[in-house]
Image (cartoon, rainbow, N blue to C red; front, top):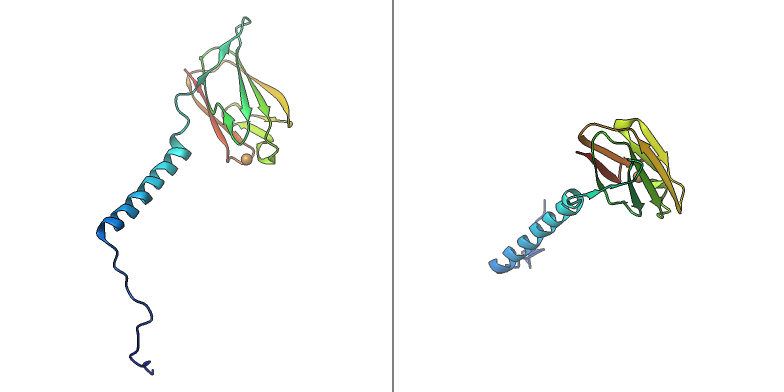
Length: 141
Ligand SMILES: [Cu+2]
């Protein structure tokens, strides 16, 4: 193999100051931490359902790019009604599924659709969209 004339090398190393390398690494780590928080830790403490006179626990959930609130707190041993108001045209959100209750609900656009669930014992019951990409949690305590 022929060696090219010992001219200028094809690349040269530009040495950056250590402080700059450290800064770039820090920014990268902060972005990773922010991303983990955004996708995993963002739901916060949750929103409690309100109690109706009929002894039903009710809450309205806005469906717009996600579920708001996405963490719903209800009390154990009492029936509940979850009203989903969907304003997001994405077909991804056209259905919501409660696997633990073996229930699914179609959500027409620009409408409020309710799902009644029987009294349940304490636990954490996740729910999600038809494709399991958008998620929420029903926290029974
Ligand atoms: Cu989806």
